[in-house]
Image (cartoon, rainbow, N blue to C red; front, top):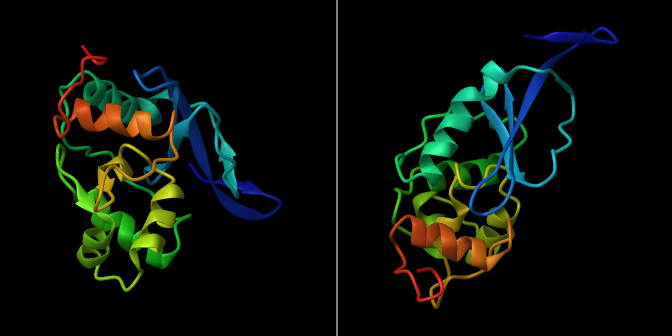
Length: 175
């Protein structure tokens, strides 16, 4: 539903929160699709009016619930890319196609995105990813190890997600 504010037509956003094994996760869904997700706090989304619409968020909540329960390997929730500028969008859209249980290096992701962004720049794009888990920045690793992760509890969250997806083997601490 579009809303008029001061004569300007703006979109709306509905929020949902759900507990996960890696912390409380927040979803923001517009008329177009999932526009933001992340840990703990609701993002401030310019020009979007908050609405109470559990029906709008239900699909994304169900998919994330199924993902964490081990029943979902590919997200089908539509993505609203409106707040992502062209170069990061190109990289994140290539990342969105990286399959469950696999990883790519920062350099490999740049190649898949047909981007001239260097590996360090790809890392910055991953750190600013507005849609973690659904656009799986946890699947991007350094050539010499896991690399960083800015979501949840940092690299421990990344390790948990990659173990959940079967890429990493559980450690004794996970058993």
